[in-house]
Image (tube, rainbow over all chains, first blue to last red; front, side):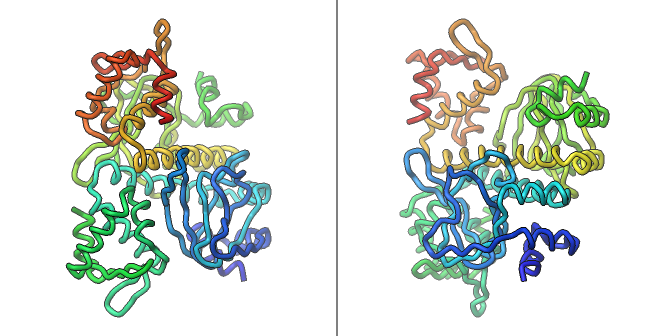
Length: 226
Length: 226
């Protein structure tokens, strides 16, 4: 039932049943097969989503056509609140990297919900502010910190968000190519490969095709903290 | 009168008189002398502000104590909407670089305003989303673009925000040291000095102590666009 799914999202957590029921009743279910786009950068921001199943990749294309990955997301997560804003466009691509299911609220439906449940509008503000603060931290890291440290932080963020225990280790349960890591940290494929190989030799990580397992979290945290 | 000031802010523009009057009546005026902080990074986010007079600098200190400038702002501008969020802390320092006056709304006053005027909550969401999208663009620039281009874009953003005509040229009406530009664009003082000197020789800019004048906007835009 949609209400239970919403309850597991930070955005909807601990809201009155009546608010959750109104939100759930107004949602539509959308299925997106692997490789398709949930939304595209520059398109009219028509819908707000809660990703219910499957993983997806947020990326941005520069005017010269260079792609940079802004995030890798897994369920349940709310995304696209910019659809609350009249006339906005999506600033990013969101592409399904697995078969996805998402709840969707169309712009006018969303505005009605936010107006009749001020708590939802305040939560939306909190969500965007939280992501803004995170992005400021990443911007500062990119401007001031060495690649090795940015890469360590990116892995810790991903494991925090999508880690799955694997014996004594933790695997990042997202398809994760080295090129993805290069784009996530604003560096080159060459530098990512060199750094991951060094960490693999030191027993800090294990990596396979599109897969990274963290074997020594304390040491990786030390690198992340400089 | 405060209502007139609010009307000139994007956040309050074109709102019904009744909403503006309620917002103005709930505001307190705060004076901040040059060099003092309007708020500090890590402090409880107690107030939302509209800067009414004077310029100020937004900056962030990394855990190692390295400063990075996130923005230079001039009046009238709204800042610190994170104060709407229960328990939040300011993610940045805001320091007066001139004597400043600001209207201030304390957390509880702000929440009451947002709840009784849903349009203000939606505007707050729009404001933060807009800044989020800008920051994403800057993040992408920092990750993918060469320093010269980032510097050209930073100057164009500043002139757009605080340009003052100066004969056929435009001066950035903010105190602007080369170190500020280095921190704004995530590069070194040396690189900024070298690039500005080259542009000065080519007649694209003139620069003095804490002052930059743009003499050839079309050429600077070409550099910014790559």
